[in-house]
Length: 424
Image 1 (cartoon, rainbow, N blue to C red):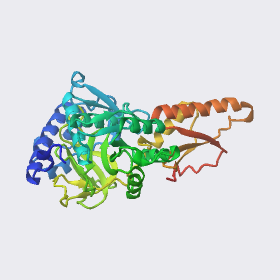
Image 2: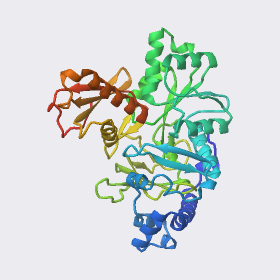
Image 3: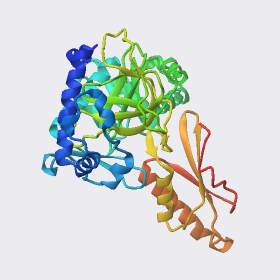
Image 4: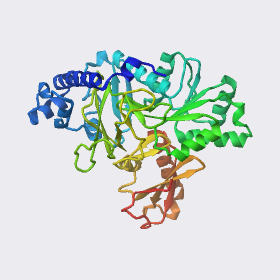
């Protein structure tokens, strides 16, 4: 099934012409309206009109998450604020988020892209789609919500949390499609078992899962325990819906008429040929409010040039196995160790020594902060120490939307060279 067959099945020659035309328009827009790009292009002696082929994009500078942080909140907007109809945010590399703006045209295109991904994953206008992502400043739930409505299917915006309530909604509303993180899908399967409910009591038939890496073994388990067909999708808070699997499930089709994708060596920045694993770099081709040039995503993947049996001519990318930087993905939320350190320091602990321990209890991520007890944490100030620990826990939960457990350990027992222990 296609949402926009004329674009999804376009000939490669025609697609590349569309990409080049949109790339040139985007470069002219950012050179005119975004000070960061105007300066970088000038420093490198680049005139947007010099970009005459898609290969020329390699001459352009990268954009990094640090650039987004340094230009907080509106420094990378390419339109005046009066043209921005929506603002959302993504997690940055410190406690400061990245603000992403959308024009009315951006929201419309975002909806179209998500409708493509949803239909490729098997959603039709006859489905009742339960979206169990958190509805907040992060973009995940909203884009999928728009896409479901555009298709004409029914949206059930159940948001995240409270697995028993999610199951009850599935039963009462006769949910046919589930959209959430893969780990949460398995948590829901565990909850079904705890409640003694057979999967056949549900109306589920398919699921679209993303926001965190997952394996084929996880897909097999989700399908077996929920009785559904599961597909993967990929997007970024800064960029929206980049790619999604069709029912062939042989890679994620990239929405190439809206995004130009490259794979680079994370160390050298050199572009790698199709089939080689490296860091995904995205240039937006149609975003008006927040265009990005050669944005380094930090996600590792490779490109697939071979034709797909589904008939789509859009190039595919392999599923994301991990990242090239130190970002942690915990229950679908992006968290950097530097962010955690900032939050702990802001609670009054100077130069804290800590370690992040990630584990999986059942199918849900468990995040624990091991914090070395400062000398001031003596036995005659236990109440004060407990208040500080509770403050750290609350601040972490509020900042990231992830429930961290915070534990004290003896001084000089944490290996400073190993900030993260990921046991998942």
